[in-house]
Image (cartoon, rainbow over all chains, first blue to last red; front, side, top):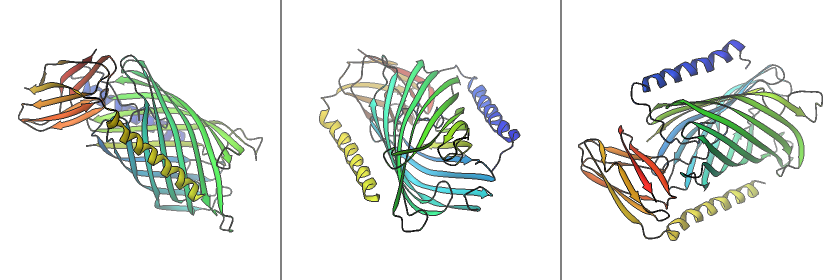
Length: 300
Length: 115
C-alpha cells in the first residue's frame, strides 16, 4: 500500500487541526494542566503509566506496517483490548486481534488481500519505580505473551508464539507539560514450520531501544516525536544478527472527552542494514518502510 | 519451543500474582482521613496525612448527583453515588502534594498534602 506524499502530509495535518480545535474549546474554562497518565503520550514508545485503581478501559489499538522494497504492501493488526487496574501497582490487558494484509507484487511474498482473526494477547504491567512529588522518574515492566495464527509479515496461516518484554521509563522534565520517554525491548518468538516442510519451530528475536519527547500544547493535547532502533536476530536469544532499522516520526495524543482519548504515531525508516543485502541503506525485508499507530480508548 | 514460551509466560504470571498478593501482607495499619463534597466543592479542599503509612480516605458525597474522585498522582478513581460515602485505600506516600478532582465536575479540585 503506497501512500502518496499528499496523503502522508494530510493525515497529521488533519489530526493536528482536530486536536487544536478540541484544545481551543477547552480554553473557555480556566487552563489547568492536571497530572497525566503517561502510558500513551509517546506513540509506539510506551510510558510508565499503569492506569488508576478501579479504572477499566476498552480500546481499538491498530498498528500498521506500510511499504516494502517493491510492489504494494500494507499489513495491520488491530487489538480489541480490555484493560483494568486492580490496585495501585499492577495492570492487566487482554483481548483478540484482527490481522489485515494487502500485498501485491512484493518480492518473496505472495499476493494477498485478506482480513482474518489474528490471535490473542495478554499483558501484565508492574510498576517498578513510582513517580512522586520529589522523584520525576517512573519505571514499569511489561510482559506481553501473544499467540498468532496469521503471520505478521506475509499473512499466511501459521502457529506463532511471541513474548514481548519491555521496560517503560519516563521522566517529567517540566511539571505536567514536558515528558521524556524511553523503552527497552526484548521480543523472542517462534513460528511452527512456517514453510510447511516439517522443519519444527523457527525461532527469532528482536531487540530495541527508543526515546521520545511529548509536549502538552494545551491541557488535552500532546505532540511529540520518537526514535526507535530495532535489531533482528535468528534464534530466541539474540543468536545471529540479521539486520537492523532506525525509525523516526511524530506522535499525537488527544483527550477527546473526560473518558475518551486517542493516540496516533507515524514512524518512517530512515536507516537500516540487512546482512543479506549489504549495499542497502534500508532494511525492507525484515522491517517495513513506514509504520503507523492509531488507538482510540473508552474508559469506564 | 511452545512449551518454553508457555513456561516463561506462566512463571511471569505467577510472579506477578505473588507480587500482588504480597502487597496487603506488607501493609501497615492505615490512617483514616475524610473529605466531603457538597455543592460540587471538596470540603476541606486541602487534606493532610503522614508520610509513608497507608491511608484510608473516606469520601462523602452530600450532593444529589454522583461524583468521581480521581487522582493520577494517587493512582485511584472511585465513583461515589449521591448521599453516600466511599472508602479509598491509598498506598504509603512520599512527602509532597497530590492533587485530586471530581471527574464528573472538574471545577471541584483538592490537594492532599503529605508530610
